[in-house]
Length: 135
Length: 135
DNA sequence: ATAAAAACGCAACATTGTTGCATTTATGGT
DNA sequence: ACCATAAATGCAACAATGTTGCGTTTTTAT
Image 1 (cartoon, rainbow over the protein chains, first blue to last red):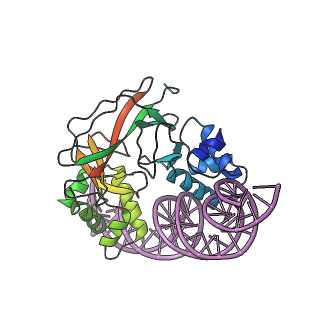
Image 2 (tube, rainbow over the protein chains, first blue to last red):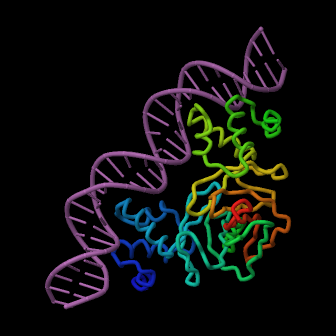
Image 3 (cartoon, each protein chain N blue to C red):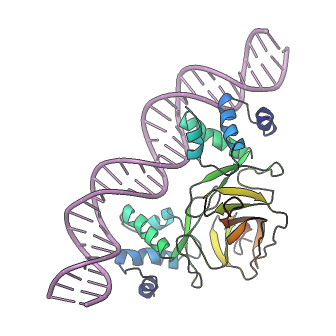
């Protein structure tokens, strides 16, 4: 339920936040701010930006950026406690070339990356190709 | 030499393009458009944006986007013939938490990623941690 | 040398995101 | 249930980033 979802992340429950969170819950893929704006009947743009910011700071959503694409947002999976762009879960971001959608997928066998002389803290993997629906 | 670098990518040689390309050649890490602007004495902002766009379209440079960070640009390695964000090389983008710089590093053992029902064309890996200079 | 194509430079505009401030709302303690 | 307060909202103004159109200049191939 939306209210507890917000409470769990120490975010106050408001009518507007519920609307925004519902957009995420009703969409299987990542959405842009423009996508969210289209689905809200009437809203204040500044409040939306601040809402997104709060959601990100508290680790409710995370942003996905891919070269040549606009910024997208997606709910953080339950196991992932990301705070300010630092994730602890193991998911891959996948962009389908057909439908242009971006998906967060859980990966069980997450690769190890070693770089000589570099200390690697976290790894993010982004893939492109064809998704299960389009193939 | 700068002239042949441009010619090889089917880009015309101009004084301005030389200046911009020199910035990339003289910097070990990825740079933002703001970084480039700081290093050019006087320039036209629109021309810079169009120059960057041409460089990207012809695969001379590529853009690097990381969550929470501004867009950066870097030369494509010689072996990599990237055109419009589609790379063929195998390099990782690494962001150092200390100096905030982003580096393109060649990776020899590039991991295989399999996602059930998804057809994976290309993989991009982004790491964060401490670079060789800061550690 | 010259003609065609591309790049440049300027203006104007579009998009995206931020800050300050007064008002309203949610929440915890009584 | 009430109240104080801390947070969220809504508005205006602004800042940063990126784009389009168009006339002029430069590069390049012939």
